[in-house]
Image (cartoon, rainbow, N blue to C red):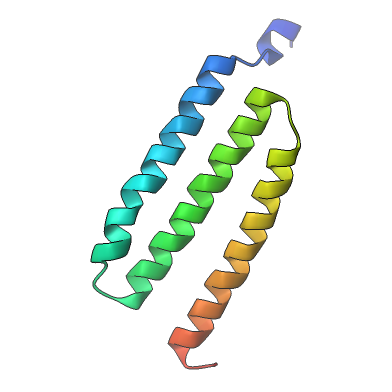
Length: 93
């Protein structure tokens, strides 16, 4: 593998980070219109995943690792939140 193959195109990273952010913003429509609590929980989990992906790509673009830390923390909080909502909907809380 050549070093040129490992080069990162910064414009592509920024483009996809913006795309993930726009998709997350579009999911807010479903969050407010969601017919049930389960639908809203899935939307919140999807927004969390898209936001984490945007943060990871932006960390690669900017070269700052603080965005990776933020993405890791929000991913962990999203997992815990999804688990708590699932337990609540199941009647376990």
